[in-house]
Length: 141
Image (cartoon, rainbow, N blue to C red; front, top):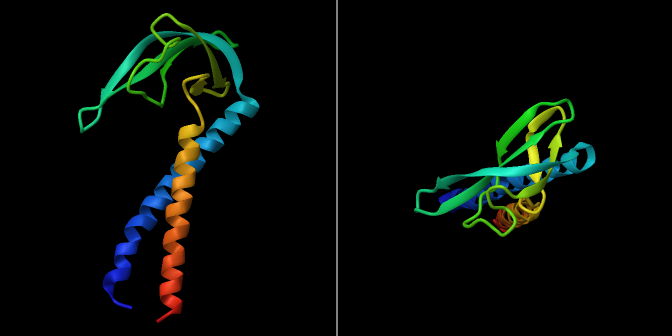
């Protein structure tokens, strides 16, 4: 086997990173679904972030009061290219948060598990595909 196998480390690395991010997000969503507390919140502003290619992403900042009376206002971890209807400033939203750490929260209807599921599937395909190719290549030497 020559040095070509080193190039297979690129999709393998990408696959493992995607798989890790996706599984982390799905586990986080599962914990919130099982142990999270649901409250009514309000969108107070949008954090606008730009990426290196010039794309603009809007992250809604939800504000709510926890069961023990703490005021919280945190930015969503997921940004979108535009603000969807029902998520403008002043909109009333449903927030599900972790009572032990309110920074872990999800805005229902905005923060979906679809992104995490996509990362998990793509990561699995890249990882498994690369490992199969490497295994076949090793066995046919």
